[in-house]
Image: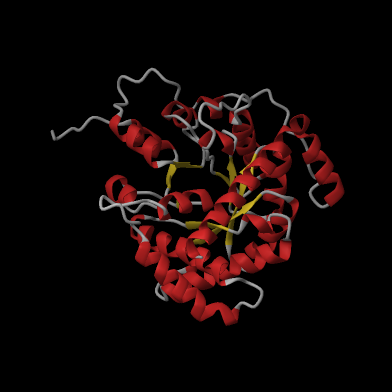
Amino acid sequence: MGSNPQKSLLDVLRSQTAVDCDTFDVEVPKKLSPFVDCTSNQAIAYGELTRLGEDGNPVHAQLIQDAVNFASSKSSAYPGVSVAELAVETMMVKLALRIVPYLKGYSHIQTNPKYSYDKQKTIENGKRIVAIFKALDPEYDSRRVCIKIPSTWEGMQACRELESQGIATLATTMFCLEQASLAAHVGCTYIAPYINELRVHFDEGYVDQHKAFDFCGAAQRYYEKIGSKTQVLPASLTSIQEVMKLSGVHHITVAPHLLTQLAETPADPWDGEIGSVLKGGKEEVLGDYGSIVENESAWRLAFTRSQDGKSEGKIIQAINIFCDKQEGLEGLVK
């Protein structure tokens, strides 16, 4: 390699945005670090934990067994939580801890999607995930754990409580400003606008006809306008063109195959858009959501009506997919 290696698109992105890796595969940050945060969810966990090695055996068979043993030993401390559920949380934390040495920021773990409409169980789940980090690695600073929670009314009320206890939260599966305004109001550390509805990653050939670029740009401008601490962290991207359009957003989380493509693509010449999503919007009128963020029924109605119901339809779809993956993970345990 020469003394002046050519800049890649990943270099350009990192110069404008905090870049996070969206994976549980430790080889990705080993090869492409540094990253700020590492994000994950039940689908990513399931993909990693069912991965087979060259010998045809599960790569993480021992990790799964160790997680089951740990969960069995701790189950009496969590009445009402099954060993399988506890083992799933433990597996995700074990995978996350392997990646921590390559991060400057947070490790993100998503709560059980089956609690998407249960504030109290989501709060307990978030605290339990932090406790598992502490139990598995007493040296790890638990203030570097970020709990990902679906952006339902109940989920964001749980975020409010966890943030008040010093636990960082990310409101995920987000599609509209009604959700984004509530996330800022309750004090979330991050939101994750899904640029593409989750289905695109599981239904071959399916294309989201209503990508959330405009929402993502509007959310960041809205937060700057109201002076919110909440940061925008878009997710669910399908191409390096989509990633680069978002350059300049607070944070961005990128899947391994796209990170590799970004690292291998020279920035010069590159004729795609860079940062276009954040450039417009000077003429937009950002709404005032103050009347709904403390009124559950008003907020629910506004969310239901957002984009003629498309926003709510997309979160229902995402929760369904994540519930399927949660069941798949519990199946691995059993």
